[in-house]
Amino acid sequence: MVLIVHLHLPWVLLNFILLLILVVLCTLSDCYDPLDPNGNISITFDIYQRTQDGYLARVTLENYYQYRHVDKPGWQLGWQWANDEVIWSIKGAVATDQGNCSSYTSQLPHSCKKDPLIVDLPADVSPESRSEHCCNGGILSARAINPLSSFTLFELEVRNLGQYPLGQAPNNLTLLAPGPGYTCSPLLQTDPTVISSFNGQRQVPALRTWKSACTYSNFMANKSPICCVSLSTFYNPMITPCPDCSCGCSEADKASKSCIRLGNTISEENIIACTKHMCPIRVHWHVKNNYVTHWRVKLTISNYNYRSNYSNWNVLLQHPAFSQNTTSYSFNTAKLPLAFQDGVSLFWGIDYYNTELVHSDKDQQGFVSTEILLEKDPKSFTLSNGWAFPRRVYFNGENCEMPLPDTFPMLPNHTNTLRPPNIILLIISLFCFWTKASFHFQ
Ligand SMILES: *[C@@H]1O[C@H](CO)[C@@H](O)[C@H](O)[C@H]1NC(C)=O
Ligand SMILES: *[C@@H]1O[C@H](CO)[C@@H](O)[C@H](O)[C@H]1NC(C)=O
Ligand SMILES: *[C@@H]1O[C@H](CO)[C@@H](O)[C@H](O)[C@H]1NC(C)=O
Ligand SMILES: *[C@@H]1O[C@H](CO)[C@@H](O)[C@H](O)[C@H]1NC(C)=O
Ligand SMILES: *[C@@H]1O[C@H](CO)[C@@H](O)[C@H](O)[C@H]1NC(C)=O
Image 1 (cartoon, protein in one colour):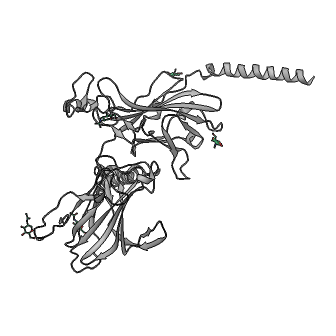
Image 2 (spheres, protein in one colour):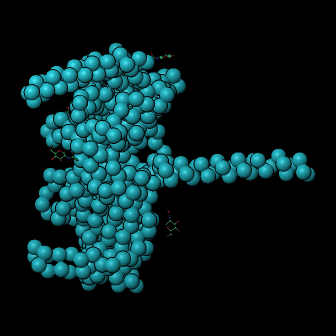
Image 3 (cartoon, protein in one colour):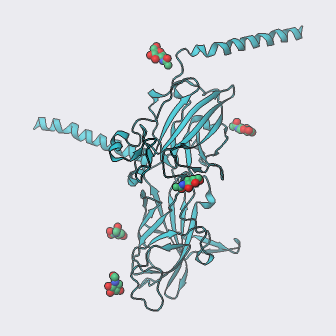
């Protein structure tokens, strides 16, 4: 009995520790992003007018993620009506399915489905199908990059409310944006949204407002990583590659033919170049120059896909030097609007120049790159101990796999060989200055 207890206790402990580690990992790296703590896509359902047998509502989707956008083919919003409501008409979006409207004879509602699925309209849709601020093919920009196109709205006329004159909140909100990974909280009644009209001269509160927040989790998306980081420097010819199998293993995938070797023809499933890391995206950080007051990095983002482009890509980098002045020559850059997150910079493409990270083909690799000039803080700047490399890298909001610190390019052993010329030069110039100065004073 004692023996059994002794055998079991470590197991319980081990399980507990494992669980703890899982929870910590989940909160640290997945469910919660410390660099974007308020990120979510909020869904607001405002009822702003009653009609004879229903109501008019405005549904707003707002992307509060600083560096995660909703890409093609766009968002899909679904819910389950609490009763037998129907969508009589809609503007600024469409329901994908009309459902069974056989109980209506003269005029048919837009959708009679119990669980309608709503999608956005293309940007060039005719004016009568539009609503204010609508229609961009389901694409929502990341907040820090383009706040003006990070939200959209559509208008609904809802009928057949049954015994509830102001309706009941729909249940089971689902958001695909565009793939899975989002979990939406229930729609809860909140303070009514105040809608301004007449150029802001008149404020009208909504009759009723329900709100939900949808948050992304990589775990829910069940996605393998899409991105990895490689490093190089001017002082060491060694290049630190992405960790092997960062996003999959080419050996394992060779059998399933999901990667392509140069020279092979591209079939439908052959979409990613065969590499040791097997990531569709690689971010390369090259420490290029070391000046007196500044240092320079070349950042290159490569697309190993043979079919898909990344439109409106973005890269987030964490490095202490980003709390200093940063100049990026070929990308846009901004610090995140979070005062307490020092040393985090967001980079994205310049319109009509490199917002599209094109796919590779047999002739060339798809990539975008820029040089970044960073100011030196003499108190912290150093080339040793891997200080010059980024701490964390995200591509389109997805965490990139970093190489382990013990594989980082190292300063050459005889660091002194770099120093003496500088020191000698300094002594000589000081000596010259001193002799000149003393010459003048005499
Ligand atoms: C449509 O609904 C009616 C009742 O409203 C029902 O009789 C009919 O079977 C349904 N049709 C389909 C195809 O489900
Ligand atoms: C929808 O939500 C209700 C509770 O509001 C729940 O009982 C039901 O199982 C959900 N349905 C689906 C399909 O998730
Ligand atoms: C950044 O550079 C600008 C001019 O290029 C300068 O005015 C500003 O003081 C610098 N900021 C810091 C923190 O050095
Ligand atoms: C990728 O981008 C290039 C250049 O903009 C374009 O010609 C090509 O059609 C795009 N491919 C896809 C699959 O979108
Ligand atoms: C530095 O020296 C150590 C032994 O002193 C050696 O193992 C290592 O390979 C050297 N590294 C470089 C970059 O020369």
